Amino acid sequence: MIYIIDRIEENIAVCEYGDKRLNLPCALLPENAKEGDVIQRKNGVWCIDEERTAKRRAEIVAKMKKLGY
View 1 (spheres, rainbow, N blue to C red):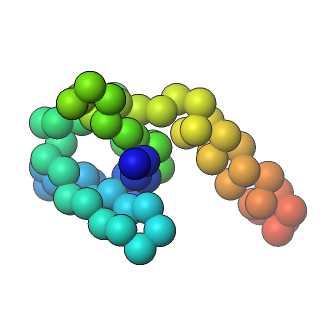
View 2 (view 1 turned 60 degrees about the vertical axis):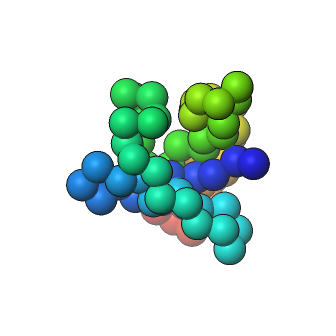
View 3 (view 1 turned 90 degrees about the vertical axis):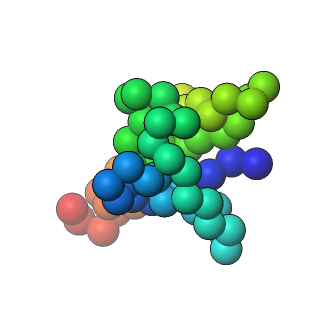
């Protein structure tokens, strides 16, 4: 299962995917994790899915350009 870090509040990362929500202590995430990153659990460790994160960011930039931003 993948999640997207929606926001970070104090030491908790609020993660969402569709209608699912997960609150994770930031200590369980990689140090460089930030809002908008796509994360997944591999071998019991949360990691950033760099490929999905880059694709998602590119899609957001394309949508913003299309809207004139």
